[in-house]
Amino acid sequence: MFELSNILSLPVLVFLPLVFGIIILMPFFPNNDIIVRRFAKGCVGVHLLYSLLFWVFYDKGFISLFSPEWIKTLGINFGFAMDELSLVVTILTTVVFMIAAISSKLHIRHGQKYYYALLLFFETTILGIFNASDIFTFFLFWELELIPAYFLIGYWGEGNNAKKSAMKFLLYTFLGSLFMLLGLIMLHYFNFLATGVLNGQIALFNLDKVGQSLQVLISVLLLIGFGVKLPIVPIHTWLPDAHTDAATPVSMILAGVLLKTGAYAIIRFNLQTLPEAFKIVAPVLAIFALINIIYTAFVAYAQTDIKRIVAYSSISNMGLILLGICSMNIIGLTGAIFHMVGHGIITAGLFAVCGIVLLRCRERDINKLGGIAADMPRLFGFATVIILASIGLPSLAGFVGEVITIIGALASEFSDVMKFIALFALPVLILSSCYMLKFLHCGFFGKEGNCKPAADIANHEFVVLASIVVILFILGCFPSSIIDVIQNIGITNGAVVW
Image (cartoon, rainbow, N blue to C red; front, side):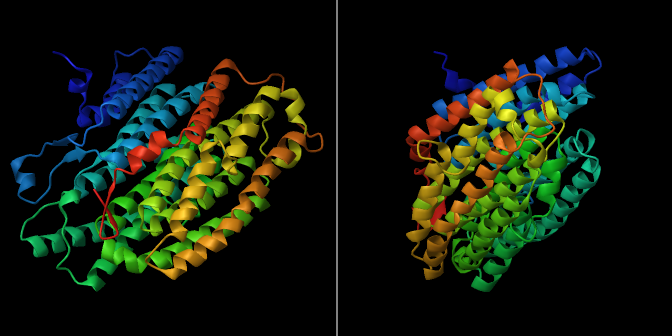
């Protein structure tokens, strides 16, 4: 008897967008913008529905290894595996890409065939990162992701410095990857010394016999690479430029999904694979998380460019996610992962609002946008809900992630430093209200500026913003839909295990 679960395959999940992208680039495919756009949206929509089947029929049996013999001799298995963490961020990825694809209609005016193909390639690389079961598969997709991201930022950017910002992003990530690669090679080598078996599968690493100092060194090397993508202050300066100069749909993906690859990697490698070393590193890393929260919040408040406000707010929120990871308990980890999802949807919505304002007003300076609430009431209504979610209003997604993360940090048993930082971070979170309410007040209710929009949001923009608001309410009112899945991640000796 045929069952839907029989058609589920991780390689198909990962590579289906790539196949769609290749079809778009084929010579026989019509070079018509409308056809390309509709086909790409249909492909992303089909892929979203396919990914939701994994949520419905989730089974830890989702694993796929396919490697030639000569690679197996090196301990490399090119394959994929899905656990609860991978499942949650995979669904987040497909949702954000669907929202970004719909939002691209008015933002992308040239080279649409190549744009949508690269967008689909980008989705494959990110899904490869989230579902890789082997360290070399992980690193392969981590590097391949740079190619579509560079062109999407540089070629379709909205600012005059788009190419410069794309190059900055590329160099930062590539240099961070050099440290990460060294850490992965050491991880592979010392695992071989400890077990006598060449094996690159992340779930099978055993470093119990490796000295603590070496484990800490590996953990720090990995954190440098992951920290660039998260990002962690002071290796964060690529983000405001890339987010500001990229086209709005690309900014939605960068903030909504790409930053989460850094948090995911820290959980997967530093927390799960090197827990003893992470116990030593976590208190120091938590201090960096607090700096993320405070410093970038003040910087966000000082901005007048609406996209830069959202960009710096993303760094501040990623600091909160990092704090939850550093707590090293299931409560903090649950809060961190939940906030990854909530923040991913919120920032996609915030950048969608910024993009609509830019299209109508040709202006991003909040001091020149005053009074547009009266001319764009539907946009104002949606923007208000999304901004309230960002500052953590109860019944919306942002509130749940923030509260659980802080509780997890306060409950940390590994360091008193964590509890002090959590107590200090709690009142500091009010800073997010300051810069977000400034965005809302100055941008929509300030003194009358230069902008006189001819029309409110279009139908496809209404669909995007309405979908985001519905998701935020669902996550805020029924958080157990995700929390129950996350809490199936096991804890062994204080460490989260795969």
